[in-house]
Length: 281
Image 1: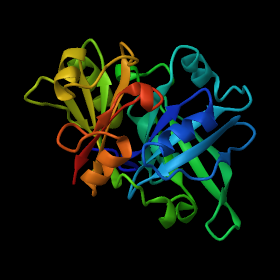
Image 2: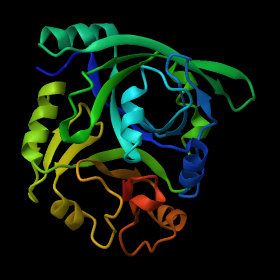
Image 3: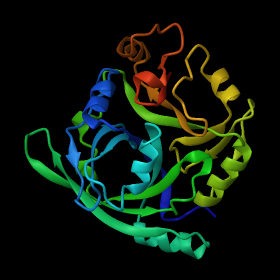
Image 4: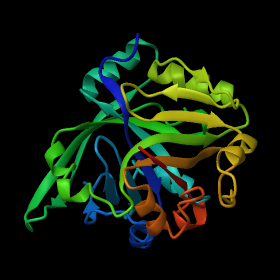
């Protein structure tokens, strides 16, 4: 039975060394980027968000070393890119109990917040409860956690959901790994889903509802899925490609500076370690 208190993909965390430089890079790709937010002191981090309809991307950087961001700092010493994926928690405390009952040593809930500058110039607060799977569990090199949004109205701000490239949702997150089947099986067990194999050999783990899939593949399959796009800068193991749905395919091509006749995509070097591709929806 699927988890009752944790549902599909909520957001992906793009961990970066220079937060403001990263925000500028994503703006240059046609994304509307939120004002910068600073998390509660025990988190030691700050972020920008790129909001879609039901999910989003988070650009995350370290401000002050803390126990909470130790794993992120260790990861950033080697690379930038998608370090974590978050699922939506309907109730973080109940989600922890649910996972622990299944023998998974879940951690939390951890409460925190950040100020949010609203379009009218007022300052509100976004508040969250998060729960984490053990840090050592990284199927395909991806850390996972779940986020309960206590103030959704301060995160999904309508003016932040309109992008020059037409981006409207995350379709899938593709992870490089030497053993796609094993990594998919590990992820599926952690989120209580059933994996399936695509025709090209990749393994897919649904995250729940109509949210994005997690896809585990090797480098040859990734190259075949994104012909003509350089794989330079991608990790040997870990999150590699983010496939987004756009309601304006020509607009996405213009924003990325590529031809709409080919793949509307950019290599990792232009998107802080993430191979980025758009599909029309």
